[in-house]
Image (cartoon, rainbow, N blue to C red; front, top):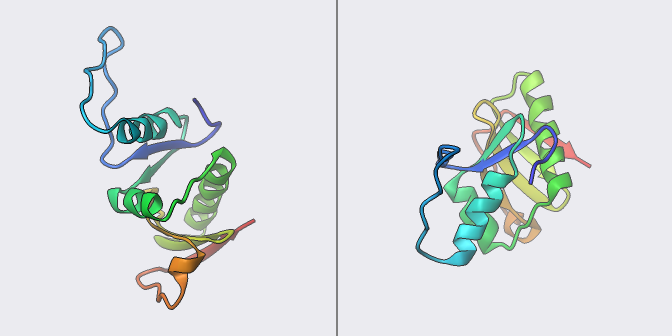
Length: 130
């Protein structure tokens, strides 16, 4: 599946197979394989990476982002970049995402419950999406 203008891959980035070769069968949990395939398939022009830490937090906190969410996150990252930001707190509805703007990577993700009594450090900007 392709999302116009946004490329999302898990980190570390998995190398695409050669066009003429069949990909090797992967062992392990089918849910993990599905998640990895989903992140790779949400590819297009720009690249947003999701760190292993952020993937784990999203899974633990049942945070699921759809196409529209990723578009808004992409737009927020672009606005932060245009203002010279390096590390931003993105407030997206009831979610807080810590992102490395320079690396276009979601570093951590928190739902409203997880944000209680949290102090956000090492950020130089905040972007609120609607």
